[in-house]
Figure 1: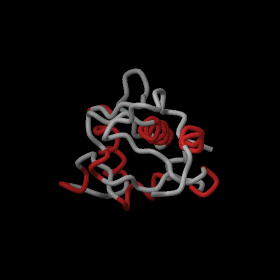
Figure 2: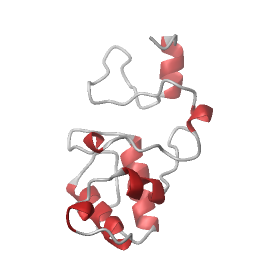
Figure 3: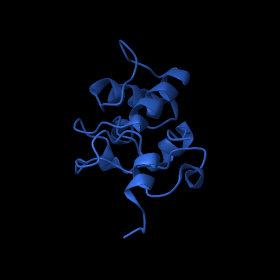
Length: 121
């Protein structure tokens, strides 16, 4: 569909450990990292589920720590967790969001302001 080779996909997606098995929830890059930009684009609210593991989540967690919005006991990792949700809710409240707008699930406005660095540079 994108005219890519398997080698390109594997090069641009180092998180793929078994090229014969890509999970349905796994996001893969279909453009070279230099086309991606300096920051991660908003991956969509459905991305933030307990079943999702991605280096984007870990990068987000480190940005939340930098912003003083951490509730992590041991630091962030690549698996979406309750600590990620609670830390992100602190970020949303820091931005002035409240109620359902500060539920800890990233939205496009708060995500853009967090400026999560691109993870595959």
